[in-house]
Image 1 (cartoon, rainbow, N blue to C red):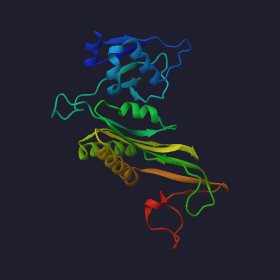
Image 2 (cartoon, rainbow, N blue to C red):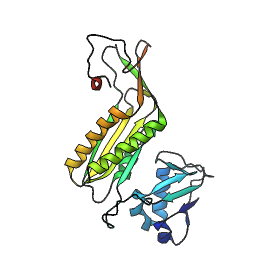
Image 3 (cartoon, one colour):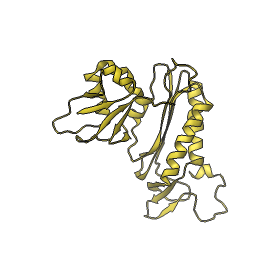
Image 4 (spheres, one colour):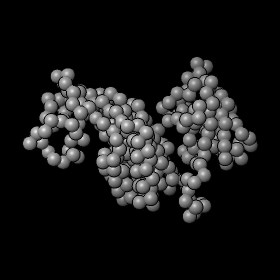
Length: 246
């Protein structure tokens, strides 16, 4: 497979592309492609955690398949990604977006990892089998105002990187679609040199996502009925705290 490279990567490989072998059946995920690149070009391996993979002009996540006829590119951090305060400072990683399950937990943590990060905090929202006021829950169905939700997730992450300068990476991913009990609904993660900043940034990001991102949840119950969370009929005994209903 021919892979285009850009920016500083061209100097690392002495050209504008590299080539890696693909399996006979042509099946390869982005994560497997990263592994193939690291194996074929060992000197690139330390750089790959800061490199995005574009497939047919779209940045792809580690679990996504790479078609054999796709245009594939390795993208180093883009201009404007650093604040210019310290030319030697490592790039800070921001991973946000709406995803279809399963959420790639391992791949996300790999992309957040950095030599300077001694702490990683992770929050995983998970579909539980119960909710207030219903007999039981068998599924959650998530939809979103997708363009606004994508933008708000990115905005929140940028704000957290600004608020917590010690943080080296932040991730805010929310799942869409029909999720069974036990499936992950949201991933929030933060990395930093020490644990305090990572804990604080992770919690603050989670609360901002829950408050601001237009993602909507419908519960499917054991008796086959459904209800949209936040739009339940008025109940004088129900909690007035929206956090307890999310």
